[in-house]
Image (cartoon, rainbow, N blue to C red; front, side):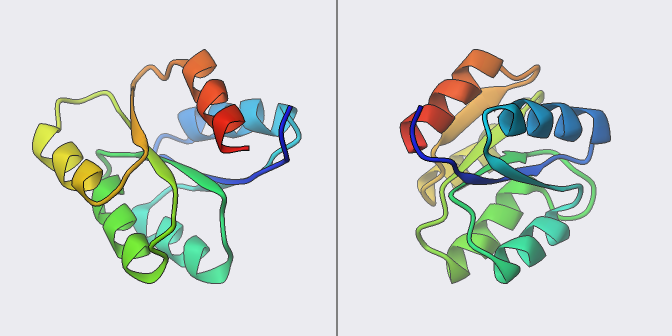
Amino acid sequence: MGRKLSILVLDDNVDNAESLAELLAMDDHTVSVAYSGQDAVDAYRLRDFDLGFFDVMMPGKNGVDSFLEIRAERPDAKIYFMTGYSADDLLMKGMAAGAMGVFGKPVDLPGVLDAVERAA
């Protein structure tokens, strides 16, 4: 196992957010959870995260727009998207701005853990 990471999980579905956060915390990573895009932006303003997992489709500020706002202030932010919807235009915009990749929902947990391991 690599170094322990500081990770932010963004999802408006509380159960999804908490489940992923719990899984990542079981590997001794420090995990914070945000339930809105603005909360995620605010969290990045308060601290650095090594990695983020952002839901794409959410009420209010979506995950891609949140990522773009964060990248404007923190160009080295490393964020993966998670989506259960066909949001090709949004995802293309996020990937063009430097997102690390996309996980479909339900999330491929071994794939997420592999991404975390590579980041560590």
